[in-house]
View 1 (cartoon, rainbow, N blue to C red):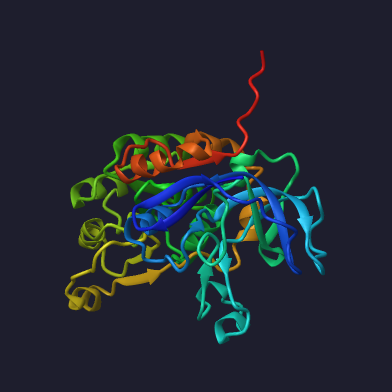
View 2: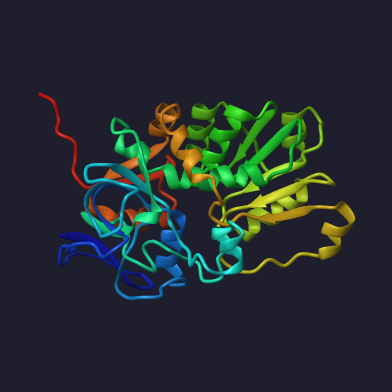
Length: 341
């Protein structure tokens, strides 16, 4: 079968590999239907930060159809359509026992600890799989995992009135804006240096585009304090700029994957009582994100950047790293749809 495999930093190869055999006890074999390219996939390709085995089939945002089940599996059946939890947790550490699997002491991810979804078939632990509606569009289903990440970031923000600013209109920022547009009573603001992508998110969500300067934000908020923001760029410069426009008492939910280190005066946080909240993956939000997929199908489809095949994955990595996209998510479809004549 064909798979996109990461060998090392900057070394991603699409190649033919052996088809998986019968799954072990507790594991399930899938025909992968679709998968999404994540910013963390790009970060790992660029830096090699999370390469724990080489080569490994990348991809943790995936949906597929069950084709075989290992001994003892009774949570899914052959023919079920599923999405995968990306988190590979131990289940034994204090955090796991407390229900905080996203903070597992030995946490890894699908596509790292085990082979992921950038392949025609995948084998995963049954505990990671959630069944979905058989009629759900596979492109929408592939966005369940990033939707859960965005939902976790939104929920980390304190309850506030007025405005919420989302900095970064990539997959997580754009999905956070979509969720806020459905649940937040105030004004949703978005900012991104990629103007085309920002415009796409604003069009789909109804958010207001702003620049990260005090005058622009004052005009957009009618001079009301800005007390809540989501940082989804992973840019040190963008975070510094955001901290400069956030009002005293404000909170930033940080969900971007950063390159470099932050150099700030901690007295600024103390004197202005600014809160920085880390948002790592998701806690228990994936089942709820799955339930949302049907009602969010139309806007999710409208936010897709490109649909590609496996052979196009390396070129897509280069395009996305260069910032050449005007949508949120590049979707890999293992079987291209048949055009109707």
